Length: 177
Image (cartoon, rainbow, N blue to C red; front, top):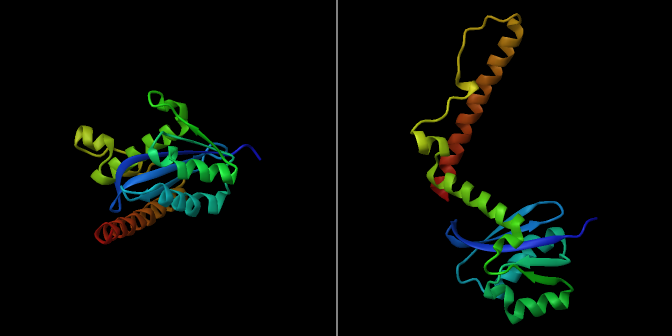
């Protein structure tokens, strides 16, 4: 198995009442884990979250690259991971791209959260309308296989029903959460 690397990085973002999240990216598998945390999260609490959401499933990493947040440069975090046998590496203040993989994941998460919060696609925000997609077009059938047309039509109808149920569930989740 390849060398495991976890890029720990934090950014301020509102997620279910939490204003902070930690994103952890495994360099080998590219798997990303996002952990919501309170703004006043201490190094000890950050460690508990890291153990609960990362180490529990993937094991202790050989080394960790993180930003220079006081939680990660403080005595508790550095001594704990030294005792546990993990190396700590820090990205520099003016070169956060050192940890480029995690930076890219954070950019994608922020983009996702922006779209989730506005409930609009970038196209709709720019033009005021949803883009026209192939499944939205209804064209009279003039092909050679009526059976294929019938099958596709049934599939589209079922997909529309499923989509409506997903929309209802999404609305309920937003009301609850």
